[in-house]
Image 1: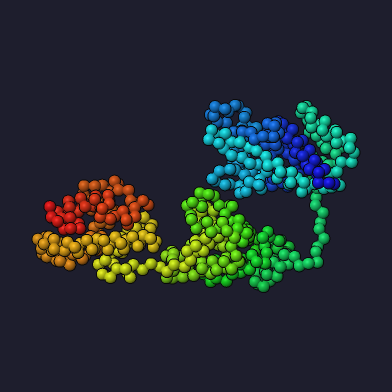
Image 2: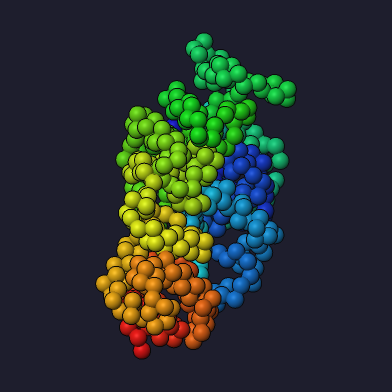
Length: 495
């Protein structure tokens, strides 16, 4: 059968399905395209409305609602008798939803149905006719789908142009005339012929050989040999071996049948090598995480291997990050890209490399300054969950500022302390640690007299820079300190 005749046959079947109208007919063999019974039924109904609308996108409500355009019976749940959850599951198997959040099929060209919701609350549905024809043609058999008589071609056109609603029996007899098998529905997907085994070494044999070399024993229930996995090339398998050789990273083992993590790892490695990794990442994630821009260009095999070794080095003491448990437990697919958090350990390691852990003790020489640093660092780590290098550097600058300013006004502090505590110049001039403790106690509401704790908003918005002497938070603490000590917390001026 020529390519044009195949396409004509596929279009004929699609138009017949689209003319089913209110008859909810289930065609079992369409399940080979959709993957589920519910998805098959949903596809048939969308084809009907799409065809009725002149093969243009149409809108339909999911369930009865208060929208001004809604009419009774004009929703999927009423028309198909499905629940909202069942319809969402069915459409995700065959559809691509436009928007920021991608659920179901990730690429538009791989979906049979394309749908989206506009700002007026309408959900529009369109058919990817090229993809649908391609999938149907892949299941057509030349001998069973060929039309032997030209006269029957004219009957096809006449049948399609007939506005009368075809019944199930009419459809069955019509398709039989076209030599397409029927079994309670249109059988346009005959069984595939078995292919002869090639004498060349297949990927299945290569995987089996690797399993034997790794001494991985299949379970007793695994009687069949492992099936070929997509993207399972020699190059990709070698990079998985590089990952498994790293002592501090989670091993990725091959199992029969292969796990989703194993398949996803192979897919991500393939995308890295081909420079298509960015296609499955949303634009919003690209803006929030600049390191993801590394995915816009192809990576070489050597670069991927170096990044894997860099991640292993990052798990060692003395290197960032400080908390390393998540790196050690992370699987290969999540390390390349985690779609739930939007982070990529691979992209971060490639862009920034190995960074030594920041040591504040090298920046602060006085014991009291180090003690003050520890007070502020504990506060930000426990209360705000900020224990990174950037925060530590800001705390060091904050402590240096407070300590230096207090030393500038040492004479006033000595005079004040001689009247209050019997003269302890060290406590007044350089003991910035006591000052830091009182500052943190004020932030926690433990020393507040004229201000209540619930008036402070210092959660994730507060940084060490926000505690500086010219800031709003410090001005509140200054009033509190003067209220308690009758002296300025920095200059020591009495009131």
